Image (cartoon, rainbow, N blue to C red):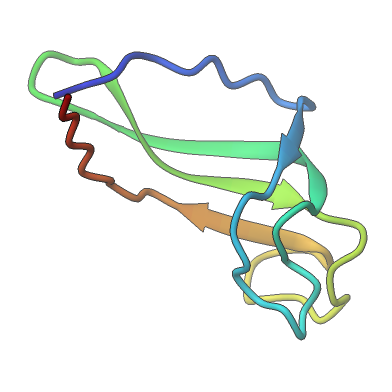
Length: 85
């Protein structure tokens, strides 16, 4: 089930909601800025999000390959939701 679309705008603020890299400073509550959006096109020529690049100034300044210091890739994830009542 698809829940809907999330508008992504370069420069918008982002809140990290999981601990990804505690030592590197990418933790629940960290804030950042959306710098890039990477997507692919599906069979219906619609954009499908693959990853985002977020700049988190509180993170480690050790740069990953092909990224600037403090830029962090966030990759696609899927979550299964079950509702009962």
